[in-house]
Image (spheres, one colour):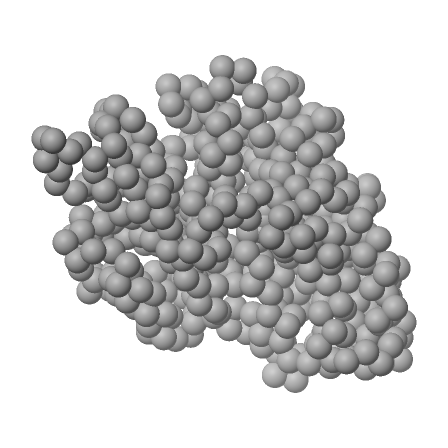
Length: 464
């Protein structure tokens, strides 16, 4: 195996391991089957891969009306929902200077001439908007001409995410330090200095002011420097939305074998996180590329093939960000005394909710109305005018969807959490309408909080 091939393979696997457990496909924009594989825990991750040309920094999306009917772009990752934790929209997002993904090689164990098998490890931190996750991968390569095989993955997560420590970076660094202790117990000591450790932050840090995001990254770098592991250049950074979409696409198509296929058939991906959502696919029609904004097209080389993908990340339109938007809390002042109300909540509902280190007072509308119809219009106000819909996606395309699409499908009972299943997008709408019975009822608080939060989620998923 040539050096570039091994480097690329390692980076694919470092990204791939986290998604496969919850990978799900979204067929013809209507079905969401779920696939699982064994791991020592569940996960989600990202790493460092092909260089993507002409990236454009993300900005929050404008509010211009679009038709009521949407083709959803679901995706699957972790459900880390806490009672009702929205995420702030892009108010002062940290600028995203583009740094192409890098590929790092973990040095293999020494092998004897009689035994060519090589064992090596890689450590990946996924700093998401709702939590920080560590993935520790073990690879075996039995022959230099063969691709390495991922034989084991150790995963652990902590909440909240790094962005919650925006005013206390040292405490955020401590969460990384605790996760590194797990890595030291998992990776054999003789492999420490050869095992690369990398942290990639996503929408949670992209949504922060630049100075606060940089302070957190600086603290993480210092924690990494204290560790005995190999620290590559640019080992701690914020991943832009374009790379997030491209890397997820590479992961899914690598794992499903489509990148090795002679048919050129690939699948698209739909990713719904807490702070952003991504759609990525390989266009079949040149017209799709010609009509798309230039910033939505990513070009890169992989396995001796040149790919030209349609990819876009809607920063500030992740599931929790959208919930906060329906409350009208985006960029609001006076958080100490202001109460944000929504028709998506029961009239008597009142609670403090926290996300990204910010606490909001939220409640239903005591003297108003609540329920599906009014909640639907609140959600529509948030997503109007922000979605670009490539024509060919409306046809019989196959998409793998993951993260909160999967989680909410499980929460609603639409699919089995361990076996997955198939659902239609309209099933989310049906669940939202069924949830209206809880809006004025006297159900227990736990069920009330869960159902009313999911009312907003189901509506958002069914129309985005």
